[in-house]
Image 1 (tube, rainbow, N blue to C red):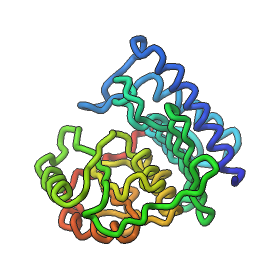
Image 2 (spheres, rainbow, N blue to C red):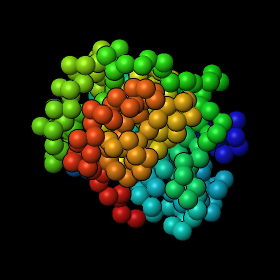
Image 3 (cartoon, rainbow, N blue to C red):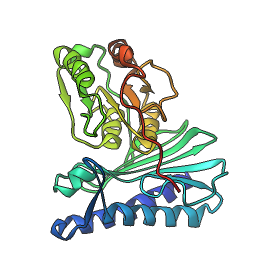
Length: 274
């Protein structure tokens, strides 16, 4: 395992310990709303701070983009930038539904280099380094081999914020529900992408996503032999707020189904201010 990944794994596991401890007594949890249906807890904040402390101790010259703290930590002009979601699936966590994860990625001049997605409930650790493959614990991951959307299980995410275009999403939902084997919406995009990499899903699509939701998971998919892009099938998806991820054959079919919606969906919100 690459030395940089080792540090990221240590940070993810520390965050996982914080999350698991808090999950034992959710009644004591302090929750606030960043916006309608978009929650943050003291666990999100403590988890992000623990991750940042570990990463910047090892790499003090690096920059950071965190869901809760934006770019207020690390060097703003750094060539290397960590992209962190300390608890993807906060709404699930608040309700005691064990579908959430820690997501940590490192990019160099805008190109993803390393990624970690850690599911503390199941103790599943997904890792990837550019050019070195994707792994679940020590097992090499490959995307599924299904070739037709009609045989595929597809993951997605429902709109939940004010301003999201529900009617447009329902059009997309209808298209897929009429063609694929099934649609699933667990509520944590980082895990959804990890599951595409592991072949548990054949494909995934969602709109309204942020860079920290998809950075690590996208590298997992590409290193597992899959493809990731926006609804036009182009690679500049990180800041577009829309993503498709799948094995190559299913990916092409999904782009055909979704390109009419490219750029029309609710895009990514600006990152939090420093």
